[in-house]
Each structure stands twice: as structure tokens, then as C-alpha cells.
Amino acid sequence: MKTILIAGGNSGIGLQAARDLLADGHRLILLGRDPRKGEAALASFGTAGDRASFLAADLPTHDGVRDAAQRVLGQHDRIDALVHTTGVFTFQESRTADGLHPFFAVNYLSRYHLTQLLLPALRQARVAQRRRGIPAVRPRSSARCPTWVSCSVRSMSACGRTPRDCAGPWSPWRPSPPPRSS
Ligand SMILES: NC(=O)c1ccc[n+]([C@@H]2O[C@H](COP(=O)([O-])OP(=O)(O)OC[C@H]3O[C@@H](n4cnc5c(N)ncnc54)[C@H](OP(=O)(O)O)[C@@H]3O)[C@@H](O)[C@H]2O)c1
Image (cartoon, rainbow, N blue to C red; front, side, top):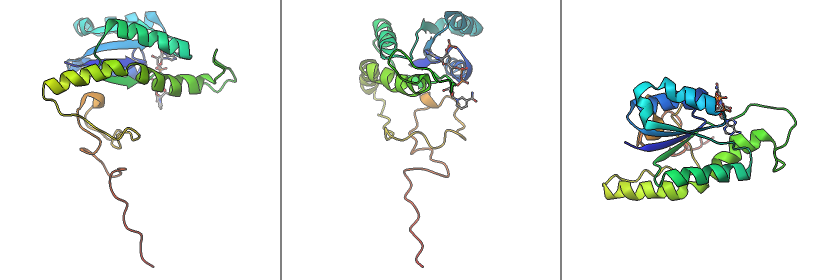
């Protein structure tokens, strides 16, 4: 059983990922803004909801992300994986308290920053995995899994394969074909 944090887990894609990961037997921490949606999500899991908790967090600012990370770390010293589905879809000209467009702040910066702040718990989980003899998964940090569109493993974050293991038709790890000689 792994402990997996799903940012944006009270709705949409994150909620579906939560259902799949619970079905795979994992323990979940769901993050989202709206506590009522969080409670509704937990209630919808039935008995599997015993393995899930919800933490209300507002992530459009540096302070909001720090606060969320501190509360997560206060309750969990080990996290095996993060799933980032937090997102807003707005083209309105507005700015967060940090002076950034919410689209950039929430959809991009909050994910990066939250990951950075939760690294101690991620590393702690890795230490525990190593003790149990579980080999390291080392995808290149700059690359996302190239097969996510067609992946048959629904809970990809927990599948344990590296992108290299299941590279599809296109892969950044495959050498480009040699240029044609004219
Ligand atoms: N659905 C699609 O077809 C699709 C396609 C391409 C890309 N995407 C991207 O995939 C991501 C998830 O999409 P979705 O359809 O699952 O969207 P969604 O149902 O609207 O879910 C977004 C999640 O992000 C959370 N969230 C939004 N603003 C937040 C904030 N300031 N602080 C903390 N949590 C916040 C929401 O929590 P609350 O509900 O509590 O606010 C919700 O849990 C988005 O980035 C979206 O742009 C979606």
C-alpha cells in the first residue's frame, strides 16, 4: 500500500484517479479548495474512503502552497507519489496576491512548488522502499511518460514502470532516425 497525494483530488480527473488508486489498494490524501466537494468525494468512495483523507487548500499563491505543504507534512512523514491535477481554466485578466495570472500560478507554479516542499516526505518513502528492496524508478525528470495517452495501466503514477519500460511509438529515449543522405 502506497500513500499518494492527489492535488485536485476532489473533482474531475483527480477524483477519477482517486477512485482508481483506491481500487488498487492505496492510501490517499486529497487536496482541493472546496471542503464540501472533498467530503462528497470521500463519501462517494464507500468503505474504501477509510483509506482517504481530504485537506482543504488554496494554492494560487506562494503562501497558500507553503501552508498546504506544512499541513501535509504535519500529518504525513512519508508520501510515495504525487498526482497533480490542480487546475483552473480562465483567461480573465486577473492577478493573484503575488501578482501572477491564476492560470500560471495554479496550473504550473503551485505544482512545482508543492513538489519541492514535499520532497522530504517523498525521500522518506524512497528510503523505506529501498529498505524493502524495491528498485528505484528513475525517469528523466524533465520528461513525462510518453505513453500516457495510450497507457493500459490506469493508475500510472503507481504502475512502477519507467517511461523507458513502456515507451510507445514516440519516445524521447529512442534515438532519432539518422538523417537521410541526399
Ligand atoms: N478535463 C479535461 O478534459 C482536461 C483536458 C486537458 C487538460 N485538463 C487539465 O487537467 C487539470 C484537471 O482538470 P479537471 O477537468 O479535472 O478540472 P476540475 O474538475 O475543475 O478540477 C480541478 C481541481 O483543481 C482544484 N483547484 C482549482 N483551483 C485551486 C486552487 N486555487 N487551490 C487548490 N485547488 C484548486 C479544484 O478544487 P475545487 O473544485 O475545490 O476548487 C479541483 O479539485 C486542469 O489543469 C485542466 O486544465 C483537463
